[in-house]
Image (cartoon, rainbow, N blue to C red; front, side, top):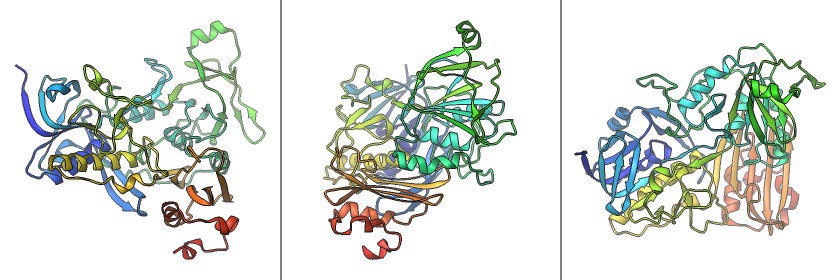
Length: 492
């Protein structure tokens, strides 16, 4: 007979959302044992939280062993096992080792898995968790050229951090970083791809642990998302002694991936990579192990391809035989108390899709900041239900706010920073100082709806307040971004 475990609270997922949820539940119910199931051998814990403003937080992510988490929270029991099946009607979850967990409340924080352009090709790598990042680093040490496909956060960080090889960057949009920036911000950042990177010591803020079997023994179904500083402490340097070389192919996608023999049968010439100020091309060798055919007709040979084209919510272990409502993006739909459509089952982080009508200044994005917020709020909602208490929606869902770093610039996104859902009746104010800062404000009806701040602008708290209080700014016009006016003091 398989073992059976009875628990009041069960959390699935060792990433930021799951660990945050388990930590909060352990504080809410110190007399109860909280079970945290994780398919990966290490868990992600948020540390060094810094409150930048009312809604903005900066934090580090540490990889911890289960023992480290359990010693800090004695009523958390970490179980290293993947989920085999959820029998929601019986409030039972079965793990791969056959153990049956009977729960009163369950929170699913299983994250997401990479959306690879080709499955099962050894020359196409996805980067999602620590093991896949380690595998990428091993491939990079021998690389002459890498093709990066995608235009999100991982792609932006990779293209900037890689050195010692040619990089071809294929994006489907007109400009880089389309998820985060408009074309103006992209133009501000592009010179950084040619500039010399500032030298940083190879130290890592995150604690590193090795697990039995060594790094690189990953199962690509498993592993929680990388933290916001995942590349720090990694040497993303290839073997060649060449200047930084990044070539962007815009408005295209990968049509086909070919191995060397398949490429030879096409009888076509591979595209060389332009290099240098006059875009002189290097002579392209004909011994690349893999080739990518792009929809714009170009063919690039490379040592490997990085597929950074987004993620799928990891719902497969849970939906079979259960009546979950799914969002358009395939995530488990949750209401404004993080409840799924199945009784006693909550969800948080990348695995879920928000089903409530959001605040005018908030939208869901699968980011570390929202994973932390959702995990914490889900635990509070679970505690409120057990105590039969009412709970107001957390203030963090009033305003979208995210702080990160791209191309060695501090980047802050607030509200409808790209005019999402505002239609055509909004206007933009811009201020740009080459090499120092880029400030964009989104206005609608004279009221601030969003902002992008690149560089050390020190405007985040002021703009956050202006978005939240919806003050009519029509009278200020372009003076709102006049660098000679101390806007912080003016609106204090």
